[in-house]
Amino acid sequence: MQRSDLPGRGQTQALEPCAARQRRPARWSERTLFALAALALIAGAALALGAFSRRAPPAAGLTPAATLAPAATPPAAETSITRVTPMAVRPAAGDLNVLLLGCDRALPSWRTDAIIVVAVRPQAGFVAMLSIPRDLWVAIPGWGEERINAADYHGEIVNGAGRGPALVAATLQENLGIGVDVHVRIRFDGLVRVIDALGGVDVTADRAYPDIGVPAGPQHMDGELALAYARDRTYTSDLDRGRRQQQLLLAMRQAALRPATLARLPGLLAALPDVAETDLSPGQTVSLAGLALRLKPERYRTRTLDESLVRGWTTPQGAMVLLPDRARIAQAWAELISP
Image 1 (cartoon, rainbow, N blue to C red):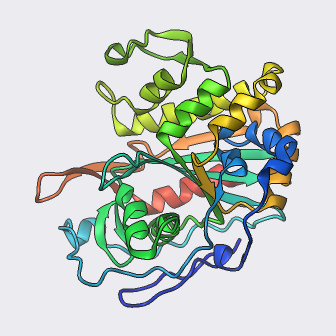
Image 2 (image 1 turned 120 degrees about the vertical axis):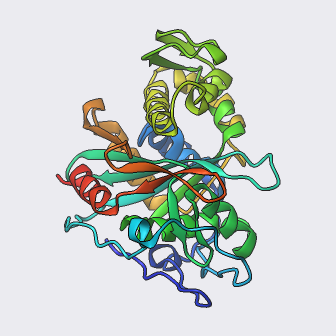
């Protein structure tokens, strides 16, 4: 799988997989059946939401903000930022790493609170998800060290609308050695509408979440409750929230596979415009649709960056963040995507 070299301060470099694809906007309404099948695929409906959404522009060169002062950094002995070389895993034809981003654009200085890398492996017949906690302390190219959930916003305001995912991808490549081919970015308000259009989702909570009115055990959730469940961390950590986000995505996949979903197609189409953007090509969407029809639930793998892969640290300014163990994360990623 191709990986781009990363820019240093004052340099620009496009992410190769995206920059190589010059595409015109597609009339996705003509591909409804294919897109609906893809909707039932990867980590749930999220990947194929872009099939009904506006097309993301091709990735641009990353333009660092030279005037921005880097954030305070921990001692060099603890977090020296070096390029990570992942363990060798030979890619097969059709392999695809998809960056899935979820954000709330309501605030002027918004952050991306859901970051999941979805590894699609058609020949090996599985899909793997790795959740990246929003508080992970990383080196954002051109910006210094900061939480990873700021990368999307920084890329957007410097390089233009729709360009933030390229900076997130570059950050993952530089810090964790994880390459990204394409992205899907979803607004949380749109996610609520999509879940409602699917008729809700069935989720089993492993414990009670009293602040949002969720008891332990199986229950049916509408869009608002499902989003609250995926975002709540009143009594849990950011690491646990990543696990619940994956659980919700898989529940969306199951909801999309219900026979009744076809009857809900008009409402689903009405809910989708402008809720997401992607640089998935029409051909990639068709391939995902084919995989959706044959992949069984047990062929989905999930992993979060848990306490064995990160540790807590407090910055001099008092911010509580997570420091990555880069070597262990590289090993965990290689194991997750190995056939």
